[in-house]
Each structure stands twice: as structure tokens, then as C-alpha cells.
Image (tube, rainbow, N blue to C red; front, side):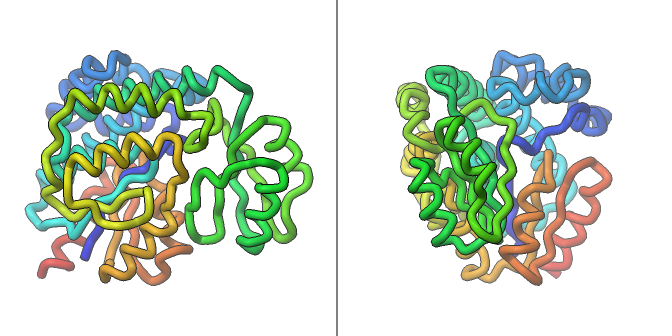
Length: 306
């Protein structure tokens, strides 16, 4: 079973979209995505610097647009089916589109609303996030609790992302749990925590106007790593995820239990394949960072379905 995965915020880098726009029809597609998201994604993905594309309002639609472009390109080159799909954080929107729950335009409009709402919520209080790598998980969680920080992302492979007040994040970085490294993240606020409750309300109102279809492929949720079979529930979980922890560790455990034999991460790829090397040892993982990586992904799909 080959599983397709879609990355979350922080995976973007300046200019990463440029090689993709050389493909036939790509520039027009991204332009359409940008119109739906009300962001100049063509400029953002080719010309804007790291600070500009770090802005939550820009980063989220940019990442989803790139993921959907690379998904389209791969599925156009191979008729071999994926065994299932999942997305990390905002990547869940791309996963829902790829699974047929939402249309392209619905996904792009929704991610635009999500990004703006999360940026607005982050502006209400000074909060931040930091990755905690290594250490004993119970010790890490105890340290976070003592600092009134939330484990916002359980990424597996010995990585937990903490979120909360900026002074508490600074204390965590200065006094890391034994055996752990703390890496402050360049994000606008404490995503996937109670601080994002206003954003979840905004997203819920936008989602209420949609009529999601049931997934056409196996679809795992960040909420608890289980398979979601109803489009309405997938959308509800997507809304709730904004203010709830991302359980990517449980997603990877479910991939393993389902018999995953390979992983393909769509653009802007690299983060999830890195986690898979630690959390899904022995499972080949291909990062589709640029068009030249598509051939390797097609080969993996062909080998699986030979």
C-alpha cells in the first residue's frame, strides 16, 4: 500500500514553486488557485522572501496549492492507485481535495479563510511554538505541563511540538528536558491549541456552507489517526483540528498497521518523509520536491501495483 501525504506549514521555502510553473498548464492552475484564495500565489511561490511567505495568510494557501499541483501532475502520469491519503495540519485540506471530499476551489477558499482566521487569532496574545526533539516522552510532557504549554503536534519519531505563551516557550528553550533539544519555530502563534478557538469558530461558519462528498480513497485524520469514511465528519474534524493537537504519530501507526509499503510526500515535500524515516523505519519514502522527483514516485506506484 502506497500512501500519499501532504505537508503542513513551515515546509515552504523561497522560490520553491518556480520549477513547477514550467509544466504545461501549471501557471494557469496556480493563478486560479490564487484567485480563489485571494493571494498572489504565483509571486509568493517564485519571488517573495522567507519572511513574506512565512505569513500564515500566505503560507497556508501556498502550501496547499503546491500540494494540489504536484498531486495532479503525479496522478496524470500514473493510473496506479494510492492506498490512502493523509495531511499534516493544513495539509489535511489538500488531502480532502485529493480524496474528492472538496473541490479544488472549495479547498483553496477554505484554506484562505483558515490562514486569515489563524493569523487573526494569533495576534490576540503573544504566543509561539517550539519543536522538542528527543528525551523521554513522559518527561517532555511533564515539563510542558509545568510550564502550562500544550503538546500541539505529536509528530512521532521522538518529536513533539510545544505551543503557548512566548515567555514559557523561552523558558523551555533555556531549560530543555533531559536528553532533548528545543528548536523555536518561526510561526505566528500557538496553533492547534485553545488560543485558536476563534479561528475554529470562523472556519466552522465557512464549512457550514459546503456540501462535502464521502472520500473516494482511504483517508486518515490528524485527530486520532483513524480512517474517516464520511465527508461531513472529515470536514468537522478538519475544523476542530485548528484548536486541537495534530496526532501525526497515530497517523503513522495506522499506516504501519494498514500495511504501508511506501510513502509519497507532495510538494513542498521533505518534512513528512523525514518523520517517516524515524517513525516508519524500513518503509520507502519519496519527497516530491520538484518535477524531476515525479518519476521516482511513479516507479514506486508501478512497483507496488505490478
